[in-house]
Amino acid sequence: MALLLKDAINPNLVQTLENTPAFVHGGPFANIAHGCNSVVATKMGLKLADYTVTEAGFGADLGAEKFFDIKCRYAGLKPDATVLVASIRALKNHGGVKKQDLSKENVEALKKGFENLEKQAENIAKFGVPMVVAINRFPTDTDAEVDFVYKRCAHLGIPVALANVWEKGGEGGMDLASKLLDVLGSEKTNYKPLYELNAGVKQKIEAITKEIYGADGVDYTKSAEKDIASIEKMGLGNLAVCMAKTQYSLSDDPSLMGRPRGFRITVNQVRPSAGAGFLVALTGSIMTMPGLPRHPAAYNMDIDENGRITGLF
Image (cartoon, rainbow, N blue to C red; front, side):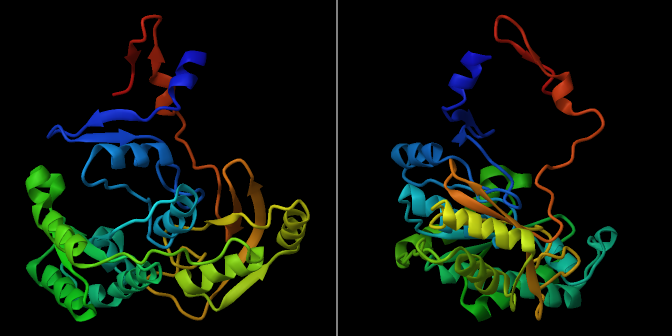
C-alpha cells in the first residue's frame, strides 16, 4: 500500500482509442472542490505537446471559475483559450423541459435555456480569455435546434462548432479543433483572476457570487461569521476561495434553472483547506460527501501480490 501511495503522486499516462496520450491525475468534483486535475499533470502536458487541453468540471460557474481563480493563479498558468461545452439537451432542461422529454424538439425552451449559456460566456469573458462554444451533439438534436444555437452564438460574436466525438472519435472533433486553432491564431489572451488575494474573505466570496452567479448579495449564518473571524485571526484570510455550491443552478438553489435573477446566496460555513491553499465556502444545502450506492464498485476491486488488479469492470 505504501508503494501505491508513493506512486500516486505521479500522473497516470494513458491513451485514447486513437492513441492520443493523456494524463489522468486528480479530478475532484467542482461543486465541492476545485474541479481540476493536478498542476503537475498540466505542466507535464505543456512540456510534451504543442497544445494541452485540460478539463475543469461541472458548470463553468464552478469549474472554470476555480480553474482561473485558484489553479491558474497558484500554478502561474496563463490559458490561451477556453472551450465552453454545452449540449442542447442541457439548455432545454434549463428552459424548463423535463428530463424525460429532452429528446423532443423544443426550440422555444431552447431559447429560454440559452440564457444560461449566455451567462457562462459572459463569465469567461470576465477573465480575459477568448473562447469557442462546443455543442456536444446528441442524436436527438434537430437541425432547427442546432441552427438556433449557431445563430445566437454568431449574434454574440462567439465562434461555435459541433462536437461529435462520442460517435466519430477524432473525426467528430475536427470542426471544433479547427475553430479553436483559428481563435488561438487570431486572438490574444488577457487572462486575469477575478479578485485579488489580499481582499477580505467576504469581498472575495461576494465577487464570485455577484460577478459569476449573478446574485444580488450574500447572507452569512452566525456560524459562517464565526468561521470567517477565526480564519482571519489565524492569518489565512489571504487564501483563494473555493465555493461549494449546487451544479444544477447558477444560484445555490438547484430548482432555479436558466439564468435566475433577484436571488441571494447563503453561506453556511467557511472551512480552511490550508494545505490546498484555499477556503471552502459552503452554500445552500450542498453535501461535501457524494453519495455511494449500497454496494460500491470498490468492494469488487482487488490487487494481488504481483500487482494484478481485478474487479475494475
